[in-house]
Length: 157
Image 1 (cartoon, rainbow, N blue to C red):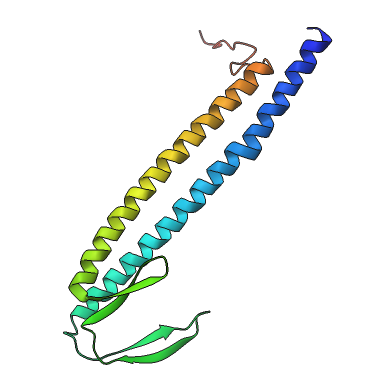
Image 2 (cartoon, one colour; image 1 turned 120 degrees about the horizontal axis):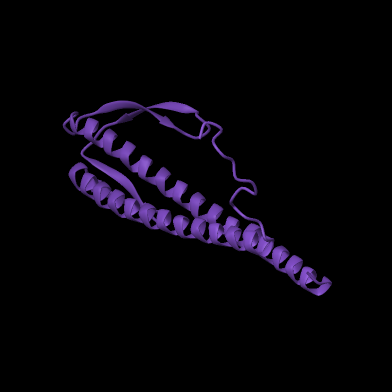
C-alpha cells in the first residue's frame, strides 16, 4: 500500500469516527432523552388517572390530602368539591374538566404519547442501524475482518 493510499485511508477513518461520535451517537442520545421525557409524561398521566378514579369514589364530597409544594415539602390540603379537576393539557395550559371528561382526555393523551414513543423508538432503531453501518465501513476501510484469523479445529473430530 503506498503512502498516499494510507494517508487517504487514515483520513477516511478519522472522518467516519468524527461522524459516528459527533453526529450519530449525539442524535441517538437526543432521541432516547426525548423518549424518556415522553415516558415520564405518560407515567404522570397514569398516576393522575389513578387519583381521579379514587376521587370518584368520594362522590364529589370533601377530601383531605397532602400537596407537594416542591422539593418534597408537603402541606395538608382540604378539597371542598372534588367533582371537577384542572388538568395540564400542554404548552402551560390547564383545563377544568369533570372527572369523567378528565379520564377521557387522559386516555386520548396517553394514546397519543404512546404513539410518539413508538415513533421515537423507530427513529432510535434507524440511528442504531446507521451506527452499525458506519462501524462496518470503518472495519472495511481499516481492513479489519470480523472473522477470526485462525480457524480452530475440534480436537475430537
